[in-house]
Image 1 (cartoon, rainbow, N blue to C red):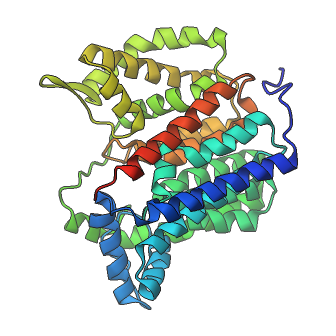
Image 2: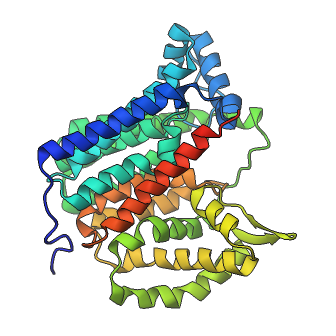
Length: 396
C-alpha cells in the first residue's frame, strides 16, 4: 500500500527548532504577562490549591488519602514548591514548562519532521484543554510529558526508561494506564518479554495505591465532595469517544472512499446520542452535557435541538472512520483501551480526552493523508483562540 505521507517535504532542522523555540517563547511570554497571574479558576480554587496546601502542611510526610481524585506524584511536587515559595504563578510555570517539554519530545517521536509532522507537534501543544491547563494548577501537561517520553523510549527500545516514565504517568493520572496496557499487549504479541516485564513493573505503584484506596481514587475525595457523581459504568462515554475521534482524528486520516461508512452510521449515532442523554433538549434552550470547546461551539451556533443533534451525530459517525482506515495497530489499540477505561468516568468533559487525542496523534503520524495541512492549521488556530479567550476573560 502507498504511504499516505508520500511527497511530504522534510523540514530543515534549523526551521524545526526555530518554530519549537518560538512556541516555547510565546508560552513563557503569555504566562509571564497574563496567564500565570490570572485569577484562580473554579477547579483550582476548590480542588487543587486546597489539596496542595494541605499536602504542604503535612510535609515531609504526607497521607495518601487526600482530597484530589488523581494519584499523588505531582501533588507531592506541587506541595514541595508551595511549601518553599507559596507562589501560584510558580506552580503554573511548572505546568507550562511541562507542556513545552512534551512538545519537544513529540518532535523527537515524529522525526524526521515533515511539514505534516511539524504541524502535528504543534497540534499537541495547542490542543484546547491541554494548552489552557498548561497555565493552571491542573496536571494534564505533566501526564502528557511522561506519556510522550514513555512512547519515545518505547520506539527507541529502552525498556527501563519506558517503565520509569510510564510509572510517573500513572502516578499522575490513572488514565495513563491506557498507554501501558496498549504497549503491554503489543509487547506480548511480539514476544518482547523484557519490554513486557518492564511495563508490568511500571504498573505496580498504581496497583498498590488502588489496593490501598480500595478503588481508583482516594476515599477522602469522595467524602469531601459527595456531590461529584460516581458510577461504576458509563457506556455513553463510547459515544463521546466517537465524537472526539470524529472531530480531531477522522479529517486527518479518512479518504473519500471511506465516507460511505460515515453516512450509514449517522442515523444510528443520532439515536444513540439522543437516548444516552449526551445531547438533549432542555426547555427552550439546547442543553449539552459535554463540556468543552467542540460541543460548546455547536451549542452556541445551532439554535435548534435537531440541528445540534445532527452535528453531534455527524461527528460521532465520522469517529467510525478512524477504525475503517489504515491506521497503525498502536493507534487503534490505544483508542480502544482508552475507551474501555473511560467507561468508569461518570461525567462528560472533553478535557478527559486530552490524553487520548494528544498521544494518538503521534501514534498515527504515518497515517495522516497528504494535503491536510489546512485542517491542521485550523486545529492549531482553534486551540490558541480558545485558550486565549479563556485566559483573557478569567475572573475567578
